Image (tube, one colour):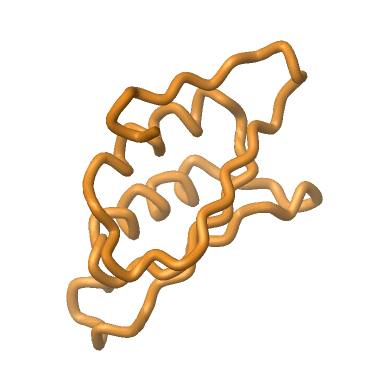
Amino acid sequence: MLAHSPPLPIIIDYIDKHREVTAEDDKGILLALQYRDRVRRIRLWRPVSILQELITAIDEEFPMLEYLHIWPLTKPDTSLTLSRHHI
């Protein structure tokens, strides 16, 4: 569907702790991240294992990105590793 839609900005917003996020949702996030030139905002509150996969997908420039908020949905002692390229 994204491939055939007009080039409108994409907002990825998954921070509602009361909403169950499915594996299909995670696939949709990964798909949306492929349209780097359209992604304007990213807000993610996901388990570290999922965030690690998503951060790997965010490996190139996002020219339209205005806002980025990534928060692990786990205990504070769990680490999320960013590659040097992401810092």
